[in-house]
Structure formats: C-alpha cells, structure tokens
Length: 311
View 1 (cartoon, helix red, strand yellow):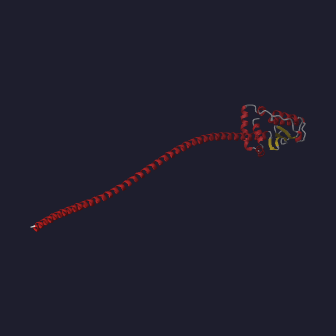
View 2 (cartoon, rainbow, N blue to C red):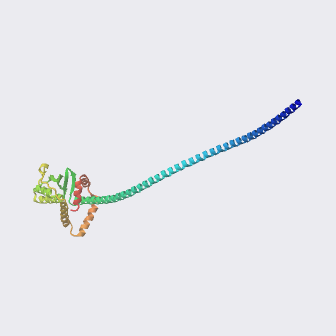
C-alpha cells in the first residue's frame, strides 16, 4: 500500500511540474511573441525615424536655401541702396556742374558782349583813324600843292616851303625843329633871318608849334621882301632856348587862329569853302610819295599834319 501511495504522489508531482513547465513554456512563448511584436514595432519606429530624419534634413536644406536666398536678396537690396545713393550723389554733382556751366555761360555771354562793344568801339576808332588819315593826306596834298609845303621826319621835323619867292616859286625855304623833354630846338634854318631866337623862345613858352610854322613862313616872306635873308645854318648848340611845359590848349587856340586867318584869306564865302574842301579831297589821289612817307616816319609829324589840316 505504501508503494502505491508513494507512486501516486510522485505522479501527482510530475503532473504538477508538467503543468508548471507548460505554463512556463506558454509564458515564454507569449513573451517571445510580445518581444517579437515589440521588435517589429521598434523596426517600424526606426524606419519612421529615418524617414523623419530625412525629411528634417530636407527641411534643413530648404531652410539653408531660403536663408541663402534671403541673404542674397538682402545683399542685392543693400547694393541697390548704395547704387541709388551713388546715383543721387552723381545727380547732385551733375546739377552743380550744370549750374557752374550756366554761370560760365553767362560770364562768357557777358564777356562776348563786352568784347563786341569793345570791337565796335575799336572799329569806330579805326574808322575815325582812317578818316583822320584821309584828312591828313588831304591836308598834306593841299599844302604841298598850294603852298609848296611839305614835312619830313628824321632827327627832328623838317618843314619846307615853296611858292614864297614869286620870281622863283620852286626855291625852298626850310627849317628843322627838334623836340625833346618838353623843349623845342631849332636845328637848321635855311635861309636864316633875324629874330629867330625870339620865335623859338615864344614856341617853348606857348608850345604853339603850328603857329610857329605859320609865323616862320610869314617871316620868310617878310625877310625876302626886306632882303634880310642870310644863307647860314643855325648850329644845334646855339639853338637851345628857354623851355617850358606848354598848356595842351595852346595848340587848339593856335590852330583855330590859323584856321580863321587862312579861311579869311582864301575864301570869300561858305560856298567857296565847301568847293575848296571838295578839291582837297580830290587831291588825295595826287598826294606826293615824299610827303606820305614823311607822315609814316614821324608820329609827331602825323599829329602835326593832322592839326595843320584844320589851319
């Protein structure tokens, strides 16, 4: 009996252990299944994570591109602002240049206007000079033709007269006057006569050269009539007389006096005077070369001839 009881007890334990083992095996199988499921989910999760990582990388790349584009646009905007500022500066400089050019243009216009006025004035003076030259030539021609008078420059001014001696109209009577430092000096007088020193003294006192010339011709005529002419030459050292600064109006007064006297002597009416002036202009073409060259040689002679035209 005891053997049987013990065998039964042993079988019961074995059966219980088998159940325990089956339960453990089932539990292990269930655990493996759970682990397998968990592994599969983990694999899926890793795949999803990789996909997320790839998307995140793509987003990051896109963000980098966007930031680069933004930076490029910002740089372009800054460059555009710099270009606008530079353009504005150039426009300001151009406006300043335009204003300066306009100012210079006005200055040039003013300068050209002044030059035009000066040119017109110069042309007027030139025309006056030409007219005065014509008058000078007319005067020289008239005096040369009517009085046998001509002047010649050199060391001093030589005044020569003809038509004084009615018996010998071509006989020359001359004198040479030298002017220096407001002093007139009689260098030569051919022929000579008494009283020359007083005439030269009066010349230096009044500066009346043209009255002196007229008086000298008159003295030649008087000395010829009186027979007191002397064929001598006055030396330069003996002809330096008293000098004085003559007033500028003496020439005008002398020339006016000479004009009145000559016009009274040579014209009886205003009509005759006009005819005489016409004849003087016509005689310009017959001006002697010697007289014209004499005018060109001496500037003082030009002035002398010009004023003598009005005698």
